[in-house]
Image 1 (cartoon, one colour):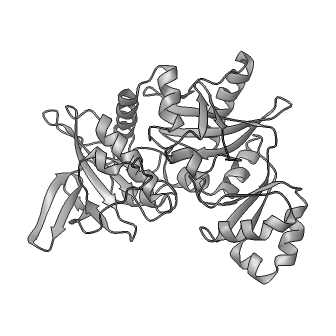
Image 2: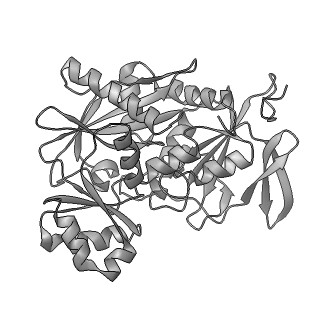
Image 3: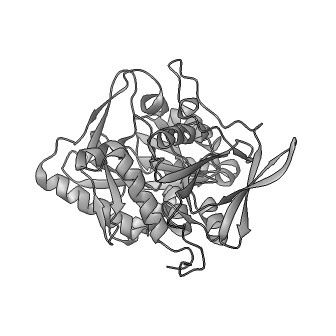
Length: 381
């Protein structure tokens, strides 16, 4: 029986075929691989027929190894990457929807069969930003997570702030600087930015995993921080540092029957020499952070945060899942820091930990996301 948009549902007698897509062209390539490794290890193989599809750093799609251990950060800190030398794979239209075709110089192209749903475990630009979502929409393939607009808005932190502000949600004051502005009139840029007051956080507007982020404590550090962020993105967000704030996160999931729910919040406390939650503190081996899952919060504050997380999810038009990050300010107010439409699933990632504390274990979480994706049609909705 065909679905309403013409895409054929998987036959009852076979497993649901899932293409787990990971890697990508962004600076978060390695973290995407780590996320995929954990999903490949935990997904229910009795229910799902899994095809691992890697996107190499040069953009090439390949049929990757179905070996979770290959997609991990080693004890020495070595970062995994998609093997660009493997057989290439392409998504093609079929009578039933879309399928995968593998091409290898040593053999004729061959079809792997139809794909029922894609789990796009991509972080950053060229994946989490609406690009692959648009490709899947045009190919009439169901997929996990937010659609084109919500993915693009939440990836671009400057536009995310515009949307959240319009919805009446609190955000930190900020300025946006482009590479063109910085090159043409750095004096004007410095004057505009310094009105915010120091210290400031300088970050790529469309980045993630704390890559390219620096804290400028004064004017003498601003130029270097801007140059660092611009190396990753020609658009940079500069925002007031939430001094003295607690960093607390909250997961949001759609319900299978409709509506959304938020997880118990969790808190991140950075230890050692790390002044903020940077890449090393997030992912590399060592004792860099302390996690409180759930966070030690008064009941009314936790309830208010969960409601704000759900409100932010709805305001941005998110679907499936998101992680909403907050600052709990010293005066007790809450500020939305950002929305991540494809949060990490690494062993140190907060999203699965928060849902486990809320009563949704990792395997169940994966199954729920795939169920939601299969129930949702592609196209306008």
